[in-house]
Amino acid sequence: MSVFDQTVCTLGEGPLWHPERQSLFWFDILEKRLYGEGRMRQFDEHVSAAGWVDHDTLLIASETQLFTYHLETGAQDHVAPLEADNRVTRSNDGRADPFGGFWIGSMGKNAESYAGTIHRYYRGAVEVLFEGITVSNAICFTPDNAFAHYTDTHSRRIKRVALDTEGWPKGAPTDFIDTREEGLNPDGAVIDAQGCLWVAQWGASRVARYDPDGVFMGAVSVPATQASCPAFGGTDLDVLYVTSATMGLGDAAGPQDGKTFAIQTQARGQREHRVIV
View 1 (cartoon, rainbow, N blue to C red):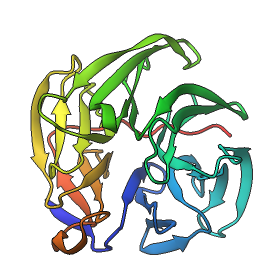
View 2: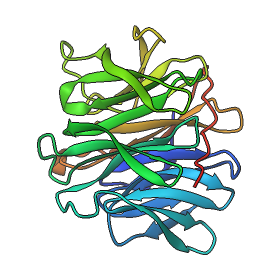
View 3: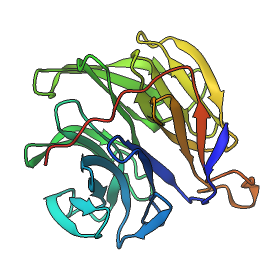
């Protein structure tokens, strides 16, 4: 376990290992910033998650849109609106899917009950997948491309839904992991190459690992109270990067809260999927 970056984020989120650049990017949602490669990029509205388009381009989700961002020039190009007429919400957790699409969840800026939605961007259009979500999180996909996962953190249950051959949900979502008895709060998640799900559990100072059947396997401790999202990266995809947050901690914030961490594991992650714009 080591501190990957000393920057203290109010709400660190959305870590993305860019496979072509061999670099980690992540966001501070509340401060409207993108970090990575030793740089901070400031935006005019909340930004929360990204997928990679090519060597120099990310698709970024903000509170009003999806847009491409050129990492070298800073050029931004609008791709599609994202709840642009809803001032209550902003984007939150998101991830590229195995079919070239991009799933992105929204939530109320003040966590308003049931204000959030999970959308999918695919072939130029944004479609609604699931509504009535308070805090959208844990968007990730199995290595066989057969299932997607997501959660409403407030429900303390991670859902699983089967996908068709174009990556659209088929059938109703079912409960995959239920942490209500333990009182745990599932946040961001990623699935490794063996199909095991790693989920940051907000407030528990850890990232928990569950096998492909949803059975708890163990947890990795994180020296921050509010671990928010994991991502696999590194040359062999065996380093688990974890963002964290100081939001709401006030004077109780410790010296490591809000930082981004790197954890060497015995597991290996999936290569992040490319978004087709």
